[in-house]
Length: 384
Ligand code: GDP
Ligand code: MN
Image (tube, rainbow, N blue to C red; front, side):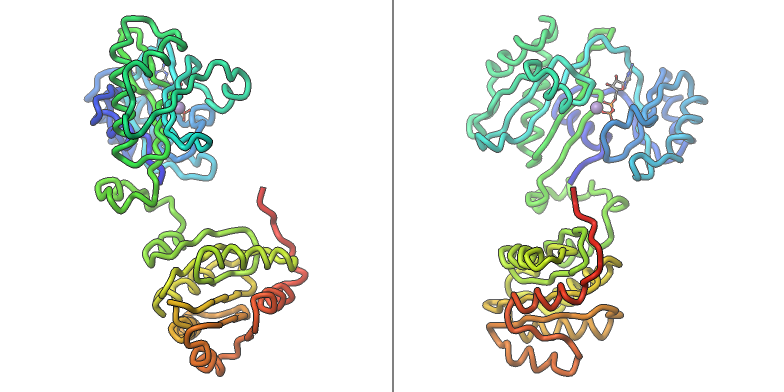
């Protein structure tokens, strides 16, 4: 789950990292009021979960509350990379002397958290990594020990940070580390962290991604999820505890178990088809869950056929059949369903499906071939 800039910066400030004065607004009038309260020049920043807002007109400087209102009107009417802007952050504008990059993420190779710092702040870090990799400093962190001050000093020595800011930088780095580990983040970066003309070190921008698999133990963070931007099917899948990933093909897949779901997608590709989704209903799924899964798959206009592949162990085939029947009765099923059911209570399951005019397959290969032949002639959009 990715947080908005204003949410992430509030978390930073709770960990002692200075941020600009300011607040989020959802109307131009509110933006004007905030600018009046601040009594300073302000920056109006679009709150959308995409990078590079600045270049696309999503960050503007306002010299008066009236101008803040006008710019907020403009920005609130924008779409940035397809995302409508619903809120703007109204922050005090600062005059920048130096821009630094400071971030934390996981280093997959060493399987450790890594702190990354660069004197080339303010611009895209990926671009810096490509063009001048020597400008990027990395420090691996032992999560059991935590970040040590000497490690931060090592980073400092390579980013041309003036000495008077060392103490503040170490405190910011420690705050960032605590915010990162205590929130179960997978990414936390502030770019730019700036030195202002009036000699403050503050985080102007922040990007934070929380590990979805850890959200269950962060009730306060769960509330920050922006429901406006998540596709309805994914919210629905989340509600029923289904693992669902939409893809670009035309063959919907309803499978029990992540491994079998992957194998099902592979075999569809093997026979020349393209899966429309990954969906794992999990072990021992109830008929409600199965029915919800099928409805989610069918809600996509791309789906031309659904392949149900169940290898019943803990999952009972009759329970799955009941779920399929309930979805068939309630949702308008406009596409053929190919069904392969084996294992626990398979005979009962197949008997329940007998009247429903579904296409029964004996094996996975048989099911995949039947599904692929039903969508023959449909061209696919292959992912990048
Ligand atoms: P991003 O483009 O989405 O990463 O948005 P940022 O918040 O990082 O802003 C991009 C750039 O806008 C920064 O690197 C700054 O150069 C500039 N910027 C943002 N806030 C201010 C501000 O208060 N004063 C000044 N002078 N520039 C700012
Ligand atoms: Mn930025």
